[in-house]
Image 1: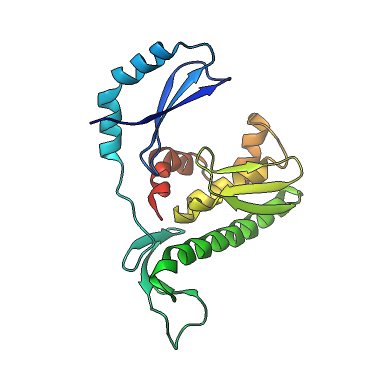
Image 2 (image 1 turned 45 degrees about the vertical axis):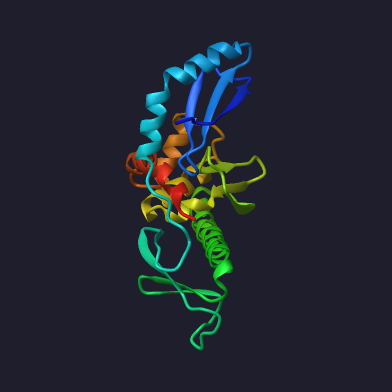
Length: 224
């Protein structure tokens, strides 16, 4: 079986690295500048069995479709498509115990669920961020959500916090940690000892969510 691989030359890379994207099973071969093409190709060929094992071990994709079960802040919800007309609908998407309801045509279900999750993520993370920032005497300028793959959150110098909206699928203790991590950067724009002291003041245990993201974070990309 042939496996297509994208070659990426990275100026700061120190060695050749292979990455399998858990979202779409695509494969990236990252190489430093100056590496010969033949060397990069030979490295990829030597890792063929590893690549196939990684792809085979990826969890199945879960579409935003009627009957699918997706976690929302640690609570599993079954998507229920209510069709074009529903007298009980208070909006396009709404929640009921253990369920996430959506009204509309089949072709729009996935987009409407995704839009609701992104909005819910931004509102939830912003509320938590401003609460924690108040404890440190700092101010959050604004909160945005993006579909990032390389990092779960970031903090800009102007006080803007960014988060991956896919964190909405993680348990609450994980999102609380990521938000606290970025809020701590409002005080310390580094990962030094004083930064981690701020994190420890904001969350009771940072080791557990960090371990969860290391072991399960890739699985958050399989939804939708």
